[in-house]
Length: 214
Image 1 (spheres, rainbow, N blue to C red):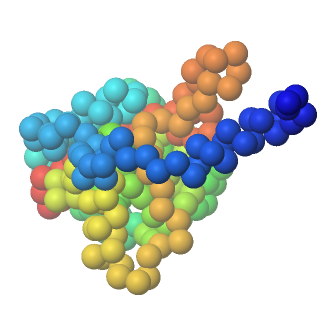
Image 2 (image 1 turned 180 degrees about the vertical axis):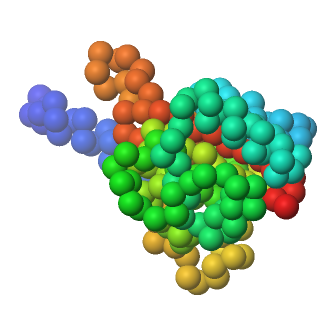
């Protein structure tokens, strides 16, 4: 007897039959399997390697004096004049060493550098987690051509899940409305697949890891 079913109907019939057949899960332990290999490196080293791999700049400082020596070198190299910092803790830190900066958003359209704190440093992928909870808000890490992040060694974590746990521990149910992970300078390759840094934000990212803020 001739089969009058169309090719479409035959395909759908095969699909229905396949869906009804019970098959064993080929990966029964998938959820329990580790996503990454076990890390054996120190978090500082892993973060530095991953940040550098995405064109970021990592600078380790033992204390505040070491930080300002590096900052003066960078300011001289890039001819920085418009340096902005809005977070009270950092303002106090910079003022202590008489480092010049803008405390308000006056002439912000001319900003060359934004200095901010962060929530965490994610070593696994060299990312900086920031939120809008601090006085720096959203603008200071996005608008200036150079973004400087100052972090303590205690803010280093291995994975994103650890960083989110830090947020939960710090803010409880009042989680910030904006959470962002910065992985190197902003980039795009939309035009002819040519990589361009600084297309949608800072062209340079500097992460200062400081043992002691004092």
